[in-house]
View 1 (cartoon, rainbow, N blue to C red):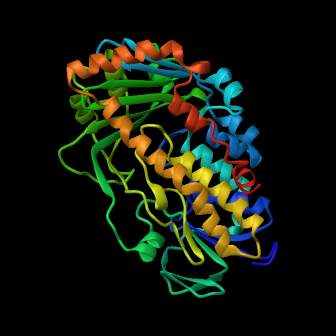
View 2 (tube, rainbow, N blue to C red):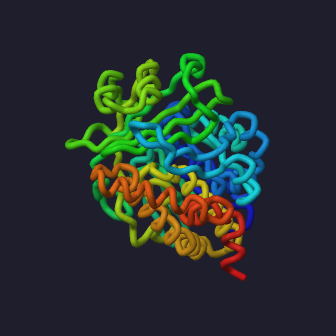
Length: 403
């Protein structure tokens, strides 16, 4: 892989793929991004960008662009599903930025994609290019598109999501694990909710077999919410599957009036079965590697899906930059650095479902008492899990690991 003259083929134009493209471009490494969709669409609604993600995005020169379109929340506000009693408060805003060295943002996915596409540039992004298969030898990778066109590169990065075509060809078509939960998602104009006591926070509500999270996006003009409920049967995984407001109202019957008012004001509801995967023992084979959800799809309870993809992308580019003459070794180094971190984040996210959805009254009372007791004991106000998540420095991880 000659310095400044290599081509990395990236399959998938989601957040992970676009950040990979930008990180490579800024290091002078040639790439071509292949996305099967005909446009970048505003699916998925809101995203939480924790400091471990914004640290990377700032290093890529996106700090000002993000600040213009994101919301800067004051804190994480966890409340009981029925009474509204506050169970936990974690500071965000200026306190989190000072402590972790990077901000915590709420942002609409479409706004983030716009920022990334503008930074990457359209000339090296090909839309409407679904990948059918690929091959490799000791010198190159070849990708065959659905229309039969063949593209050759030095390396191939599969950033094509939980149903990754690249992953299936590398390691077989194993099925994602249905978590037993369904996510309901909605966006509501802030004007329609002006009568409610909604602050600029990550509002989280925990209840028996259900939870709800809401926060403002689009410079505060829109409230994004996601409700997760345990389900006896799987439903469609697609972010575009339609649900009904009356279904969600039934799911959240008896919940606090604020939650029911948010749901009732929502013009359109999306319904998505939640899947993740067991951690892979390998992410790479030869000149091909996986990234983001293709490698480590995770549950949304700590809002780390996008953040872990962003970490992957930066560290992958740094490894390729450090070992330009040894691309296969660079991919192996990337996996060595990223695999333990992503596996831990996957398990941490799974564990949160039980904490958030406890139904036994005795266990719930113990949980709530423990949260109250621990509230004042965290250094700087952040629980150990948040310290480990948000304090990770992906910008310097490669250099720190190779000194």
